[in-house]
Image (tube, rainbow, N blue to C red; front, top):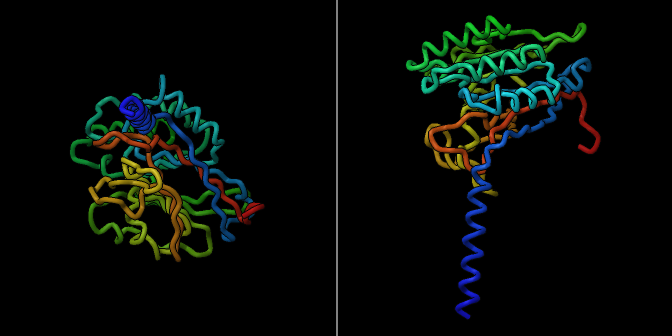
Length: 275
């Protein structure tokens, strides 16, 4: 009997070790979302948006080859970068330079800032990032709006700069004649961002809850809130939908059951078959 118990304990230990190893899997994954709205013009059926969020200058293979390949595989029509692309802890911006060199010819790129981009310890990195944006044709969409055209049809893309306070004072109301996408870094503010007439929010910041528990979700957001309401994935309320990226880079604590995520959203004007 003791021998059987000892064998079972060894098996349990092996299983626990394997679960921990699997939990720290850092392989890049791509999450695909289909978003349907009658406001989307037919000309934009199948339009693809790739979202890069919370990059934090993380390396994905030699010269970012893994991330570049993943972006290319999504065949994007536009690429949006939703903040925390750099931070004050990393002085070497070569990961960003390599990434932009590999993706700038794939689709137009739009950027909005995150809290780490605008932190006091990242002033030099932010300035260097802006130089790279000029080199590779990235559009800084902080507090700006861009109209995306397909033939005579159009959709609106609005970006809002990250702010610690009074951010709502800088959010323009959306023109209801168009399908409107809002880019803002902080997905935990989804409820506060609703009601301005936008159809879809694309955000990040939460890092998926950093530590994710099976069947539970994110354990803590980047502000220290336990079991955050919004951690990563697709959400909606009566006013707006949100795609919340789990991000690519690392927080203060290593990701657990939370692989780095590239997001691809495909727009549809009518429900897909089977929906």
